[in-house]
Length: 287
Image (tube, rainbow, N blue to C red; front, side, top):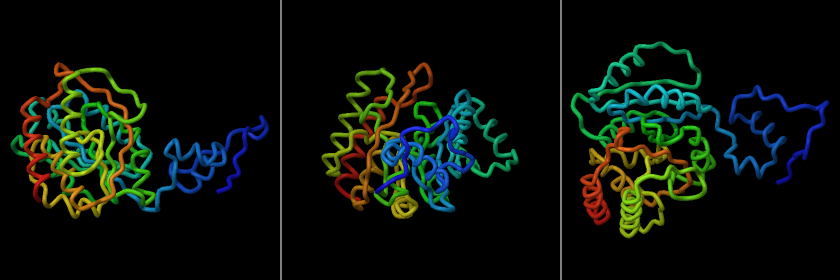
């Protein structure tokens, strides 16, 4: 497809006006004119359909120190968004902060926010299920509240879905050249082993089944969410198996990862790994 890309701009021409909304047709045409179509595809620049809304589900448990920053980063993503926060009975003041957020009025055209609370601690999977059952957007992504994943990468992950090439997108920490904090060796071995075992049962070739960043179309959510049962980290192999069984189109894209230590609040432990093994076999064998 021919483009009107110019290799350079004269001083008199200057840069193009960039007042158009990001991911609008006008904005994309200007970016393509400046950078070329190949560069736009590489950078994740594309046109969003009119009225498209992305739902971002954020399970929260004792994240008082990181929640304000991650919420600011999510709000800064230049897409129209529905942010769904689910508190899993936090005890560190997170709940009070969320009550404050819920009480604020906002006229932000890009962001709407809803807050939901669990009366008892049920686990991350339960919080994610609560959030996914309440989304109304055209697609939804899961976002942890601990700063390990960068929301600035969300538009790039959304591209295969917007272009009609994918129903589900996994953001892999082990694929490609994105920055990745070096931490626990045995955690990485465990993640790769669980992904390998999951692939054996689902016949997929994922590199990171346990990733937080999973993005779904609304059609996928309507089909899968009512069947989900796992309350803790077993959610990851369960949702993967249910998606694979229904033969949805799955893409995988690289994401950066700034892992945190247990001293910084990391919660997953070896018992969750054992439960994940059980879930891989359980949901890999039968619905």
